[in-house]
Length: 312
Image (cartoon, rainbow, N blue to C red; front, top):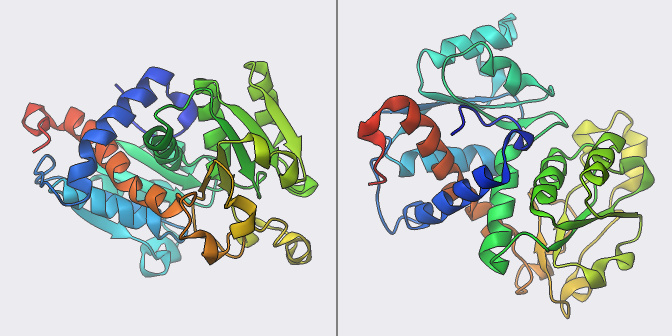
């Protein structure tokens, strides 16, 4: 069905729906209720040039829940990158040791680049301010599990929409399903013009505003993102707009919506929200395991032959 997972724009609606159905089958395996040996003897290679908690650990968990194993690095300071080894050479080396590669890199396009130089499946775990397709798939899965649908949902994307690769991917995916979107951000962090142009060109209803109050009463999903200090060229500008939006109990307690966040959060969602029924972000993080299990099984099994096709 597909050879790599680089950009959500590479997937048709039927592809996404198929992956989400496969992910639902993986849930009892992801939680440990059932065990699987579907990828026994297979190895996942991890190339993480940027920090990661949920993405890296959920990929490791997903592979191990499927009976496989993991090699790779999360600290380039302990690799030959510090000696000047190129990205392509590192990827070629790791591809010789593994059956698929997951890469996170600070440069947009890095994942697609190495997919052209290795002969194993490549999964983009985030490339700069570009795309984060597996995060988008688990976000869609969260919405589908809660609402039973994705189409016709009203979603507000809040915070850093300029540098936030999660919202870039998610906006394109929501458009495929016909969801309506509101973009809430400071002017300096508004959604890039090319994405807005693409969405409106596809007939998607898009609303832009600086004020959360303008949209909060008319949305089903409040998708909050942090202001990303590490992507700001000017620290003073970051300091001026940090904390532009703050979600607390009074913001959502009496509203019929869910609050999502790709995490980590800094100060944009108060801990008091965690215990409210609207809080979905920790469940959302768990859903990364079944979604990534589904992707790994589909990618590696298709390359590995019929003996790996069974779930258990």
